[in-house]
Image (tube, rainbow, N blue to C red):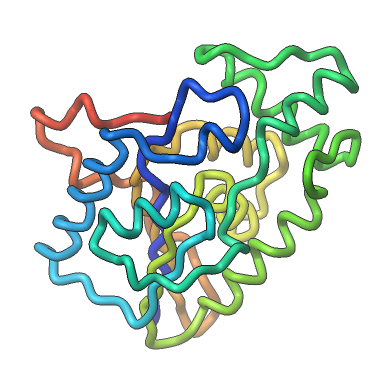
Length: 214
């Protein structure tokens, strides 16, 4: 059997108000990625191929993990949540959330986006199509593929595997930690979710401060 291992990028610029400003790792984000790379090495994890999105935070995470050779695949890039949030505000009067308000905001964005009431840079259907496309190509019996990506891409893959509606997709997205590991097992009957949101490289007490969501 094969395996697809999905890794969310390290902590980015969480004070940003737009995608361009957000798209770089913080010092902690680089450290999280370095710890993860060390953990993979210590476990003897080997991969037949390594992919990363083309965003700066994806490339920086891969490099800090010791995976600078990762092939670039823009299909692993995140949705533009900033534009989606602004579109929701314009369409329905829902303001952009503060740090403690995303739990209520993300389901509203996913539902409105899915209904095509808002779009941002791409439609929900287009985002889903590109994400499931890279998932289909990575699903190869007997091969292990590492993908460095973002929480929205991971959530969309899980939606596809488990048949989640947009609200439950949002509920899957919200807890995803920076540099978390998610595993998809490639079986003779197709891919199945085998692991979600693991951070074994951050499990010691002295790294509790590094378990971040944004």
